[in-house]
Length: 263
Image 1: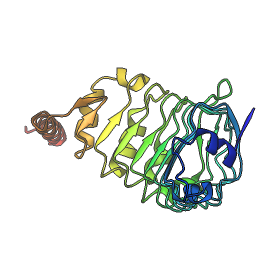
Image 2: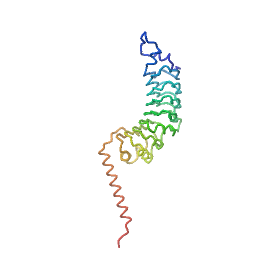
Image 3: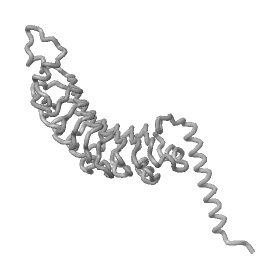
Image 4: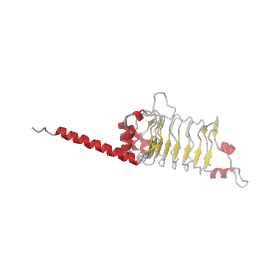
């Protein structure tokens, strides 16, 4: 297998060093490093790459997130389709904004309590043990409450969303191909997500519920897109008026029922 080291970077460097610039200086200057699909199984010492902003390591065989103490300037980290089973050692990444971990072996979303700037977390399609669902550590969720705006948790056997209600700045949730089936659970989180613009729940049992779309559109007044389809404001207004009309009619009927009969 292959270890990610300075030597590997040297072999893959597209940059042709000028005679006056040694490799050490080059390493200190690079901001983007693409080492995807190189059969890498571990991350070695990259401490010279202090200005690295974007690191592409997807489609490898990496089994542990490690040796990123140098990476205080990284904003984007791509680790999809590796063999990672735990989210760890990310606390030095103080500027991390986007983290891609789809297609790994992670069972618990944790280890994110020190990544205070994270705006996007992509953790779809984990290779979970049979019958298990992706779990969320409350400490990490609370730490992400104010920063996270995009969350992709598709295809992870998830059957409820209530614990994600703390993510108050969420603007886009992608949760396709899960096991969501309760409208009340969904309505609880929609009340909390006051900045939600897009939600995609395609492929969940809940999509087959009567009035599924109508109930979501009425519940979330900020939502602009549901399951990949744009929501028209005229449609929302009609549904809200229809709901208000039904409620008024029901109240009127109840009042008539409660009134004593005249003799």
